[in-house]
Image 1 (cartoon, rainbow, N blue to C red):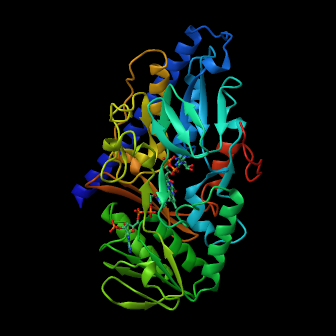
Image 2: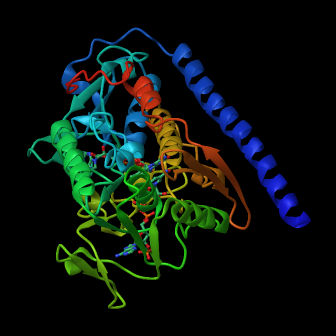
Image 3: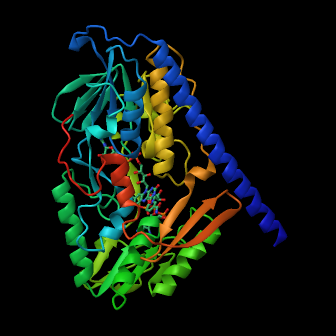
Length: 431
Ligand SMILES: Cc1cc2nc3c(=O)[nH]c(=O)nc-3n(C[C@H](O)[C@H](O)[C@H](O)COP(=O)(O)OP(=O)(O)OC[C@H]3O[C@@H](n4cnc5c(N)ncnc54)[C@H](O)[C@@H]3O)c2cc1C
Ligand SMILES: NC(=O)c1ccc[n+]([C@@H]2O[C@H](COP(=O)([O-])OP(=O)(O)OC[C@H]3O[C@@H](n4cnc5c(N)ncnc54)[C@H](OP(=O)(O)O)[C@@H]3O)[C@@H](O)[C@H]2O)c1
């Protein structure tokens, strides 16, 4: 017992030290770029638009959108560079609230946050160009878009994240806000009209969805089927137990050590991997994500790890000489983060962007990303009123049981930070 307390105390101290270290590192990088910008000629050279070098950012979610902003604020301001963001989605998809708004009705607009110029208000006018398209492939010095157009680049930041294998609740899997809202409404209706809901996958998405569904519809049968012997098995035992206790308290049936597959569902029942049959008139997959790395498969096949992630050096440059000047950050990067989240994605984005800013000035990128356990913290909602906040140091953990007071799961804050005014859709950004 005393040993456990000592370990927890050590984690707490490390947590505080980490907070201080990241703040100082961020401040140091920002300060050094500010000094650099002040020292540079700020008047713009008359530049022919074809002479402007592109720094292309592929994907604009947690990693890409942050990288684009850091780049726009830190590249030379003499008109020689511009940031070009390529993103197929009409709106930023705020994943955190997807499980909740698969259950709660009338809020389907909230996960879709408009991209706005406000986000880049600190950067010089004309610094950011927005292209609504998808990068089909990356070649040396150019990207080929789905539309067939090609864009040359001096530097490239790949931030394509992950693709939900089975759509909602993990990802809408569509590019337009309206189509995404419709899918959410359909999912809400499916759950509402079902009597026996079965959810496959006891990671965070499955646990959050099962808890919310049971909290909203206590009379329905909600079953969560998970492949392993504990829910949330990539996290510490305290969180595993905390999640299990919370679901049992709500009345969710949890089946462990079994796999569920939509192929075996016939609208009335479902056969699990052991052959056991359970009743089910609504099946929902929460079985995880796949890194969206296919765009480099042609030019740098060796850069794709067996997990599907893109291999990177500590500076977040792609670990393949076939593609020089290419950086990778966020969920798609092979950074050894076991439980990737928005925080690790954003921290990597900033490091990649500052390295590009250095390289654009002819300097060697020096900033490195180290996987730190604190980055993998999680705040798991377990129904509308409770949450579990968890830090996992590999052998010991910190678990805080809390009252969840925000029904929107920080959605309002995300809107304020990304778009300015919460819940006021400003349409599709054309940059
Ligand atoms: C349901 C759910 C809930 C979550 N909740 C939380 C939470 O509460 N807290 C937390 O910290 N983390 C949470 N996460 C994890 C978090 O969402 C991810 O870690 C984070 O989204 C990673 O950001 P990213 O920018 O690397 O990738 P993504 O968010 O996957 O974004 C990738 C972007 O790239 C674009 N893109 C993909 N391919 C291409 C291409 N070829 N060309 C151009 N653009 C492309 C996509 O359209 C997308 O906009 C959650 C995840 C899920 C699935
Ligand atoms: N609140 C939050 O911060 C939050 C919320 C949601 C998601 N996230 C993060 O987003 C990422 C994705 O989360 P996720 O929940 O979508 O995926 P996940 O963490 O990969 O969880 C999916 C789970 O489903 C299991 N599984 C796979 N196939 C199955 C099947 N057929 N039947 C039963 N179980 C099956 C997988 O185990 P196997 O290894 O055995 O296949 C895996 O543990 C994670 O990094 C997560 O931490 C965070």
